[in-house]
Image (cartoon, rainbow, N blue to C red; front, side):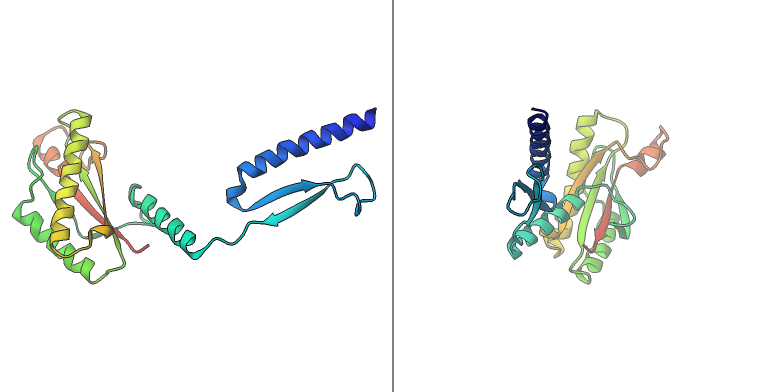
Length: 195
């Protein structure tokens, strides 16, 4: 009787382990538990057999790599992944997203740089000052980043290389509450990565 309870407990625990490992099966190997009594010296011992998953195809690996690159494009820039382009920031007037002539000159410098580095990915972030609702500022930051993207595409940079992100008012460079601070916060920042 005791032996049966012990066997039941072992089988139950093995079932739980199997369910957990199958749920995590994407990460490496799948585990199968099976009774190999012919090889066992004791009837209560169960052998664990590891079965490697089949090798993923080249297409699946390429898809996974592309997905990883896409996810990286949506993250905030970090020094290890993203570097500022030669002209990092361009600035906008209050409640505007059209590019000033000096902004167009700065973006043109970046376009030349990107043409010489065709393997790099580009992230353009739109920012706003603290005035306006958070929802409005997210939409305005999006229009600003897309204005820069459009100018880059018109300048010859492939749009598949460019991702945009709006931070709205969430990442100010100047915490002041005056026009001087606000004018520095109304910007688009440009980064690149050679992933």
